[in-house]
Image (cartoon, rainbow, N blue to C red; front, side, top):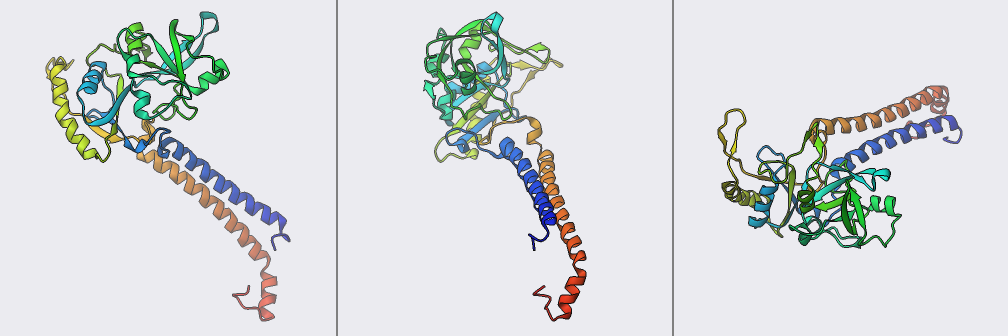
Length: 328
């Protein structure tokens, strides 16, 4: 019957193919941006440490105190929240790349090895340490054609020299969905060069500003630990940290602001733009996928109804000759 109606069969297959293809495409976007686990070791153990307003932004002095005094996580790291744009190469051959300043424990805590050379280490993030960097896989391929002789060579970033010590895996892009960090450098290099970018028309806060919120904290849960235990530990640690930091005053009233506690939330799927966290947007994408599939099914149903109407006389003849409705 399908061979006898090639036009109808082709239209039916095309309708279903378009509907299923559109549904898969929309779901693939949802999966890539919100559902896919990070390409790191045991991503379900990762927890981001946010403020009480649910924003994971902290200062560098807070990071040093948190790192040295916490015993809540098996490992912890920080990275600058804002992607930094760097001009790579000499002045006459510069190209812009996206990079991150990270703590020395960044790759170790994530369980991300180097495909060439080594990862950044805590010793690289100490005062007086030589400025080093780890290249992203795409940058390694684009600038050096995946040459294995780049270790120990220097790369110019905004006119500052960094020694290349390793290359990150091809699948690793950082923690922020929708961005692609191509080079990673230790915090201490940022403090040495003070290479602060302009963000939204103004300069980002200094690393030495006790309340310059530019870093994000992420910890790895200890084996068997739960989020409730982490929350309890953070309630104890918060006053200890803010007791050491200078008091912060409200710009409007001039009164001292009492700091609120930290909170923890899972981040196995990484971070993304705020619109991806909006449930309404996710429901809209899912509704689009459902509508695409329903339209495809409705088109196919109309085709079959048209075909059935065309065969009314044939079906009547078959019924007259004794064919059962089940057979038809």
